[in-house]
Length: 316
Image 1 (cartoon, rainbow, N blue to C red):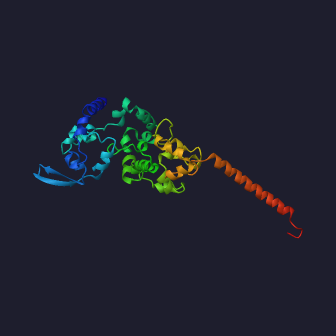
Image 2 (image 1 turned 135 degrees about the horizontal axis):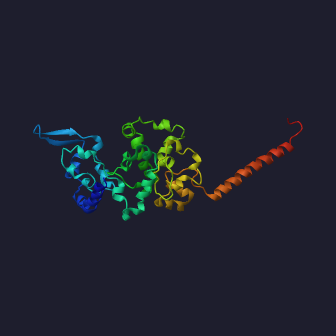
Image 3 (image 1 turned 180 degrees about the vertical axis):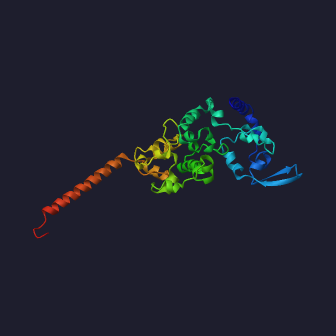
């Protein structure tokens, strides 16, 4: 197994540029793999019947070429990761059983990727409920498609874009009966029913990532990968709706969003579509609100006292 991974790494490093030069995602019909895998149907020559035949493509094997070209791995050709034997059709049944490369096979131990902390991410992931339950059968690709993955959290300055992209990863399985059962072997619970304790579900799903409540936040990592069991999921509103919000250590930790802090409270509310009440507070306004509240109570008390003192004997 280790020998095969070493061969794969050497192959990618030495010949990856050939695949990048040979590919033509702009025109799928010029790409050997995408001629079939970008279409709903494929055509082949039936040697047994000596004729051309068409078949429906398995929808799970149809690739979005636009998303493929936008993904972080678009510089590689298909056979840089998949077996070269896939260039022959019909594909051999045996190669479909071969394990695919993992993220660490290429990114692990590489100084050029050290800043992304792939090893740390893997350590945190192995603590997660996904790995603890399914072991090596649950790989990075279950959430991060190698074909279409983009580093949205690092590159986008739009909070809602980050939230939508992240939540779609979770929902691709947890909101899909087929995908969920394929991994777990169990029926998929209804998300609305599971979260029936959560007020304003729709607003939360649209503006907060699932991982905000379902992970153990790590300050040293851009995104926490330690997915917690549902029993340990966050249910305290004050954890997010406070001046010391955990969102500051998770969703709002990105450098490309820190510039919002210079805009002040009003600028933050206007520019941030996912503004959360309670997460941004102005000390001066907070003090003034206390003074006004206390002053109001004092006025009410004084008014009540004067009414009592000035009450006429006949007033009952």
